[in-house]
Length: 397
Image (cartoon, rainbow, N blue to C red; front, side, top):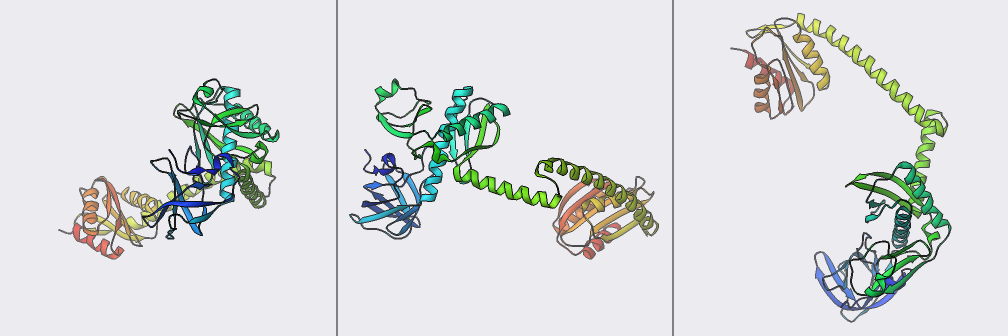
């Protein structure tokens, strides 16, 4: 049986309390402390633990131990057993969790009543929350569920805590059957929901503030729905508002015209990319003709060895254009380290670009591959001049 009286069970709005230390021991970089009573909520049921101060030391974690007691992980201050210490809850964090958790009860109840979508699990994260439901809802149903949840908030329904034995629970209309035994703690939202839950909740639904559904996706045969309540919903709205306002100023359009303006910009960008690509191809052909005419005669054939300032696409396009000329091998390297190498040959040459590139990769530590007529590698740890010198040496008898 737990020795810890859980103050948050009946008084979730408790912010400060006094308690007696019943056990204390070093653990890792901190100290594990057990109290005879606590208002700190331990991680449980999808809700994270509370933080705050205990005896002046920061509370870093709160968990249920194997005996069912609550253990508080604090800094390196070790309170003496029997000492009376004061605890203070980080109220902003606690109230945020209360808003999200009560909002989850409201949303889950509305979705089940309206569409038969049962909540299978709940996660309360640091930025957003989610529920997993057992069926997929349409966008219209999602919108209707969101409106219904907010109607429950606007009605400012009372949220109460009560307890019931296993026998009494069997006769009650719980939204979800509980696997717990013994006396159960029940959270009731008047006329809307009755659930077994050990979490912290607001006293009335009006304190939830707002329930906003921000995204949903298919998940394990059902659906995962992300939502925000209260302060989190306000914060997300403020960020979206500021982003929208900045976009409106930059594009000189009305807020409702933003999607169309972005689509026009995307289409313009695609067209510009097409034009630039065509120009680059023409330029590569011109450069290739000039370089092929200046090719150096080596035993392996006419060879173009050159360093260029460009990425892999430019080097590959240029090397391929050079190799379109008969009897030419092109080996192009980037002008900056780590060096990128592209080799391309015309069809009438016997030299293997793959073997050439593999040899360079082994010598200078790069990675790559390809075919006999076109190959490339990157990450060569050498100066471009050293790579070109190695290529020349490999092409000599």
